[in-house]
Image (cartoon, rainbow, N blue to C red):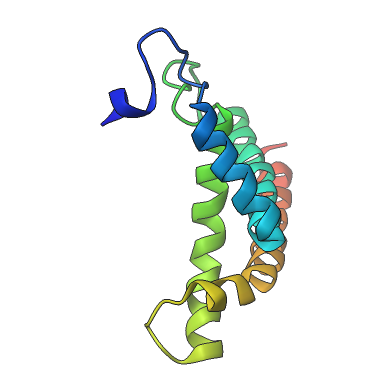
Length: 128
C-alpha cells in the first residue's frame, strides 16, 4: 500500500503531485478544514515540545511524532477528543456527517486550545 503512494527513490516527506493537488484543492474548497489542519499542526507542535522537554529523557524514538505529519496527527487527535462531545451535544446523534463535523470545528479547536494552554502552564509551573 505504501509503495503505491511513495516510490523507493522519494523521501518519506515527498507526496505524489496528484495527491498534493487534491489536498490543496480540498483545503481551498473548505477553509474550515484548512483552519483545522493548521491548528492541529501547532497543537501537535506544543504537545511534542511538552513531551520531549518535560517527560522524555532520551532523544531516541522521536521520529514518529517529530515531523510535520506526526505533529498534525497528534494535534488532530487532541481536538477530536473535544469534538466528539461537542458534536454529540449539538446534534444529539452518533451519525457522522461531514458538514456537521465542519460545523463544530471552531468550538472544538477553541476549547481544545484553552485546555492545552492550561495544561502547558500547569506542567511548566510544576516542573520549574
